[in-house]
Image: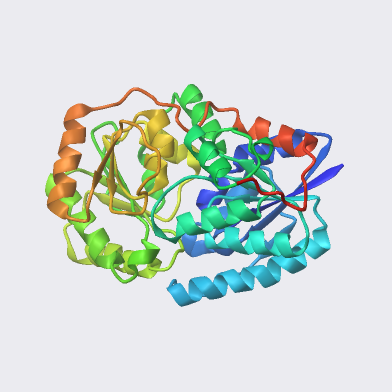
Length: 383
């Protein structure tokens, strides 16, 4: 039986690999080893590990690797700590293949540990273009990886152009879209007032127009996060729309964004704003399917948003260059431009679904490849 070790370090990581976890677990020829670490273990980011356990997955190991501070220095140190801790975990678990997700600092730690220990590495969501240090991490992980699971054709072609063998590149789609497709198919329940029992802030009628704000720090614009989120929140306030506001991720600059949210909540009339640390993906997709607009710089508005057809306003450079659908308008961190773009989206309304990032079957494809592939440990790059 082939042992597949998957490292999950954040809420985004988990939703991006959950369907593959289920498919790996369901195959008799594969053994799932799940390692949970970084922000996925912490209450301040919503204790994602509890969601993971509730979904029926039993972590094989937990790795506390997040150095407090959310600065460029602590992000580098967290990567180093993760490398040290994950090396011990891999030595104990002895996986046949390590599967890593996306482009975060814990992804880099996972990659380096597996590479130095001669463990074949599989990578999801490689080959994409975006802003911040994420793109550099993503492309670096691609060059270490032996098995590639890109989410879209554009990304698959780019991986081959980077010198990876075409026979090692499997265009499977994004596992997040698997969950989105299932939720959309089975969604018959409106989120009710019970939603507001979590988080803090005002309450409002979800049957009427509302927006979702999800904005993370831009690591290459460190120190600008408080100003940037303030521009977004002020724009939403000026529009007079109720808003669901999500807490930022754990990247460098997270505390700047969080500080901006706290100051706005404390000093502005934010009775129509409700703030959440985290959502289960099912709740988030159901809300996205009903929202008048999604605002911020999360990849969810581009990936899931295209599939759902929700109007989206992407703010700033964080998703720069990522393949997107017609549902997205791009603007700078300027409240007037943000408000104008949101108004355009409100006038337009819903968009037709665009399955750019998958058709809902990525998890099954990933598990099948992991069971059948014969990874070549000594890479042969083609140029």
